[in-house]
Length: 107
Length: 120
Image (cartoon, rainbow over all chains, first blue to last red; front, side):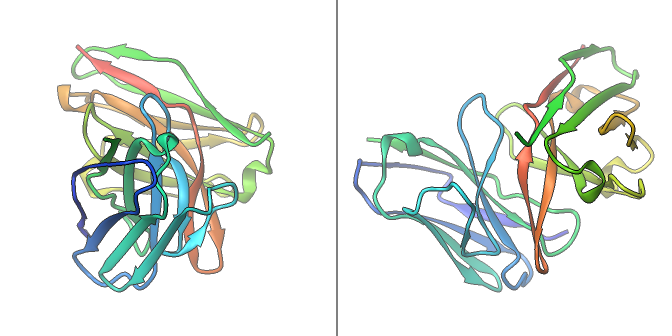
């Protein structure tokens, strides 16, 4: 199975900050990488698919990049509504493994 | 409105089986694949398996082989996930999710609200 490792596991930043979360795959996955946002008590919501493509309805302050084994999710200007846990997921093969999550809080 | 609506919370004894339903509406049911993902309290998301809503073919994660069965009923646009031989570590929030495909890429664009399974 492909292992997905996110860093950091938690992050505290101020409103307006630029925030970056990293996800590393144990084997190359080309650009088969998705990002989800999960707010407390809610199901995950797709933000980014295919490494860099913004899902319809997701705010444009979210962006993704990367290929192979290293990927990033960036929030260009952190908003209070962005408080959530963020997960990466590889869709290169099954099982479609997820990272352990990055919990984002506002300072 | 495209949505997946799951059945309600379940409480089961160790060794029992649980069957969770996921009813689709607002889209062509047989066009999609449906995945099941679970999340134990405070833990990461764990992919369990996939079912083709059209033909019914399935693929399960290795750790669930022999215990997991996914089925579908096209007449009611419903997918089912049955997990047998429940143990305490199966206590989790279970989600169904629709696979969204663009070219060679896929992701989960619509999720059910989740079903809590308690094993006690």
